[in-house]
Length: 139
Image (tube, rainbow, N blue to C red; front, side):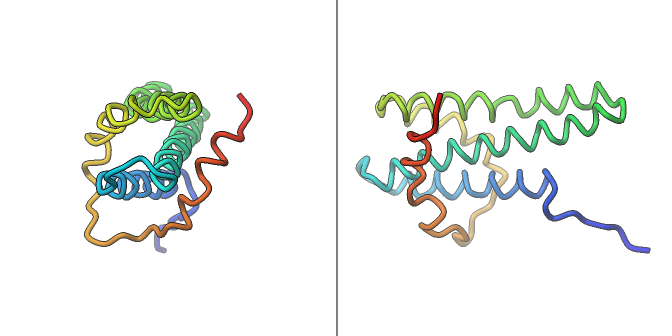
């Protein structure tokens, strides 16, 4: 009997979000000015980081339920950067502190360095309107 692979589980969703972050960072690096598309790209990175953080919590909660507390805590500590970065980017974007954007994005590079991009797989429809969605959220 073969192994069952869940493609909608937290692991694959986390990898997809990391891929989105890596591609958006690459697109942002090529933009000379901060235009509407750059704001959308920054917002989609913040939203993808939130998704990463949520999948980490899903995985860790499943391990907690099985009494793997140390593994769950270690996993949460390993991925804490995603929640912190998501919060930092969200505040920067909502407050319009665009001068703080590049240093915040630079901190993400080591965390997505393992994502190899030979071809872009995310199109503009992924980030279009992300800025409006992020700024429209309450709190």
